Every structure is written in structure tokens, then in C-alpha cells.
Image (cartoon, rainbow, N blue to C red; front, side, top):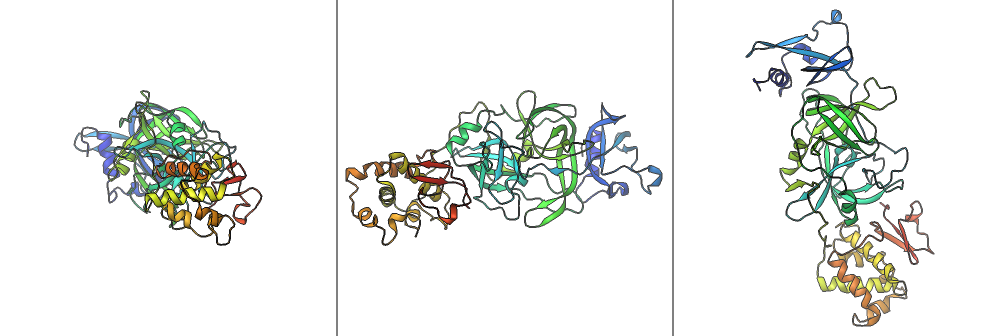
Length: 474
């Protein structure tokens, strides 16, 4: 308990683990507590006070145990004023569908799962040893839905309805249901970026450091995928909050969060995961929820964010990660696909490219190599756990099918033959992790003259030579 700050001491008493002995504090309309600016006649004053957030105000005369106007801080004998504020329960600010496709200048992201909503990416993180780059976003965006899994694809907005593949989910927090108390702190998720061009695109707007200083009245800049960049004011520097939300695998339950902060901002569905930075450009928080308040247009009036120091602590206890700042020079490390035997992998890839596209222009062979790479890097039993397994997977590359007219020539040609030299070069680049972005992450392809059932409901992400490529086939 911080006895030097009576307001903080009373706040800690009311929100202590195990609940409070104060009967009025357990009222069914109470959503949470905070330290913020007092309101007078609907306007916030510069006076700090203890905030009590309720879903609706009721006349004191009708209450058996009304909220008091103040509490006495025993060690100092000072009275701590209480300000009761009515708010609507906050809602996750992810969007089932964006009102219009967002171009590449917006920070919109979504999980590549049925029914997943759009949100915002907040920050980039980097592994301090191997250099891998990660997106930091909201948990209910990147890991929402009934069954999130490690390896799920994450899409970024590029002007098309579904976006383009950019990263893969690696970790997230799952809220703990809580009929009483506030056991949760963070609603966030990490996704590892898998395409070099994604890093180049996202590194244009970075904070220049981290700040744990959050004070009522402080001005911040919030950057949401839908609302864009806007100025906002911190109205509650510390807060606890309870509300109902969907929990993956559990359903709709009541949850309680502690160590949050509130700001006054007009955020909208699609802004979950937005970054907040202070006047010095330092990262301060990660936005998650919005409360409609008195707004009539459906926009969030009160926005809830988690201090960035709390978010990073949740993910860096077991991971050597640092926030990427604008002083960092970042580049994607070479992500080498898994191979069982290097020479065998080069041999199989070169023959596959030759058998599939020997009469095609060189970029077609490069594009097919990207498909091999994108399948191998997933390390999935479906496609094969190594480069060699991907090439050998039955009924995936026609040149290996029994009875295919290209099979004999594919098997018999020597890798020293000039006719296959280009394929060998591409194969060496693939196993070294040197792949480009011709196909935007495609892991399926077929000749343009055929129409297999698996691709009929999907739009190609690229057409190169006589082949069409897809990156959105589950």
C-alpha cells in the first residue's frame, strides 16, 4: 500500500486480491475502480480522486448501502474524495468486417480464421539474439474465436478484402473468468513476421522508446487502423474493470482486469491493438476496449488501454524480446526452411522446379519454389515437415505422380545438365532462406487451364507465366 499517496492507498485496499470488506464496493452495478480526474457538472477538473465506475447511477435514498462521498485514509487522516461515473461496459474493438478495404498505409491486421475480426497492430518486437521480428497486437483479435492455434496465419491490410499473409501466431494471453476480483492484466498476442517485405512496410512508424509514466491529464497519440492517429487525454491513470466477453474455448463469461488505464478517445471497431505514445514519442500503452458512454453514433467514448510495461512484462519473462524503436536498424533474418539432408533437398527442389515448369520463364520457377518454401516453413504434417517431404508429398506436384509424362525426364536428368542449371540455383537459394515475395505468401498453385475444386471459391494472389497462385486456401 502506498501510504504516501492516500488515493493510491485506498484504491489498493478496494482492489486487493480476495476482494474488499466494503459492502457497497460489491454492488452489482459496480464495474471497477480507478484513480483519475474528478468530474463536476459533466466536466473533468484537475483534481485527482478515487473513481468508482458503475453501469448505472441510482438515487442514494433508494440504496441500502450507498457509495460514500469519501473515505478516510487512516494513516494520514485525510479524506479521499470519491467520484461516481456511469459508463457502459466496454467492448472489444475488433471489427467483423471493415466498412471499406484499407490500403497499405493503415495498420490493420486479422487472424486468418473463419469469423475473425480486424484489429490494429501496435508495435514491433525483436528477439535480441536471433533477430526474429514480431507483431504485438490485441489478444482478442489475433487469438479470438473458438480454437486459436500456434502457427495460425495473420493477415495485414493491403487494399483487398482478406489482406495478405504477414505473420504467424506464436503466443497470446487468455482471460481468466472471474465472478469477483480482477485476476487479469493483459489481453495481447504475438505473431512472428514471416515475410521480409512486411518488416520494411511496418517499420515506417516506430516509437523512440518506452515510458511507464501514465498520469491523469496527460496527452497521448493513439494510432488505430480505423480511426487513424488522434490526440487523446488520460482520464484514469490506474483502473480495475470487469465486464462480459467471449473467451476462446469457454464462451461468454465475466472477466476482471487490473492495472489498466482510461483515455478519452473516439475509437471504433477495428482499433483494438492500437499503440499509444506520449509527447516525446515513447510507447505508453496498447489499446483493447472501448465504452460507448454517452456517444450516440456507436463510437467508443472511453477507451481502455494496458500500460506497455505491463504488456511487455507478460511476454518477455520467457522470451528475449525488445521493443523495436525508430533508432533501430531492422531486417528480417534469413529463415531457413527445415531440411533432412542438404544435398537431397537441393536435388529434389531442382527436379521439382524442372518437372513442373521447365518450359516456363524463370520467374515461374522462382514462384513455385516460393510455394515449396512456404509449405516447408509451416512445419506441418499436412504439407511435410521438411523441404524434401514437401516435394515428395503425394498428389501435390504433378511431375512426381505415377504415370505423369514428365516423371521419367524429371528423374533421369543430371543436375550437371545446363537445362536444369537455373533450377539448381533457385533450389540453393530456397534452402538458404533467400526467397522473394513474388507470390505474396502462396502455398497453393495450379495451371491456369485447370480449375481444381480447392481453389474455386478463392481469388488468386498472383498469376505468373501459365500458373495462378493462392495464399488464402485453408
